Image (cartoon, rainbow, N blue to C red; front, side, top):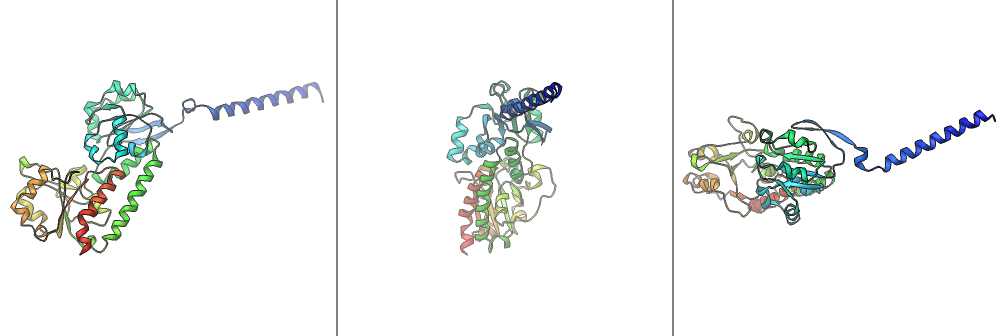
Length: 331
């Protein structure tokens, strides 16, 4: 073999060996070195985010979702309204995590978020509230995805997207499966009762000062989980106003007989402790309430945990529904 050909083979072998070493180095490189990313569709646009986030900051409705899903959280907003719905494990994690914002978007602490060194920020507030947040300032810290509530029943889809963005779908799917299994059990238990009833629901957001109460229809806060076990709330809002106003309305207290008079049974929201909030107690104290056919027939039922917005929380709601509606199943 000529000296030239031998030299050529040697150079080729050296090139292949070098390429192999480079490939091995690339596969063993840390995640930050590879900088793997993906594009995620959020309320604030198509955002390039880490494919495998390691340090996540969550705010608003994303807080309980990502705690339950086991996301790699490095900071959260406070979420006082959701504390009564947390189980012991979720509450312990919530208490331990650094708080980088308050309950409202206006209480965002940008310095605290920067100090948390996130590689992803998940904002779980309604789209209109984004105006209270300096998104450019947050985006200078880390990629920001805004995934906030719309209609109340949309928590299922939105919580899944929040978990997806944070790389925590495995933990999310576990909670979802547990909920769906329990809902199927109750659907079977009440299949001969609930589907044939015309139901109505009194929600927690009426305004006593204005003499109004909240009537909730299908897919609203107080009804959407009951819908999953076969309950149907008759009627619909007269004028849709977007978000929760597409599935609830605020008649005057004088309209109780007209609004709820055709109901076979009525459910109403109460606090986690079982006590009615002021807006609901206002309805329960009314003589018009006491005269409703469903109430006179003993078919009014208090429901706890109607503000559940995660699968873990919704398990509590299912248990509360089962406890309250048990007399129907016994008939």
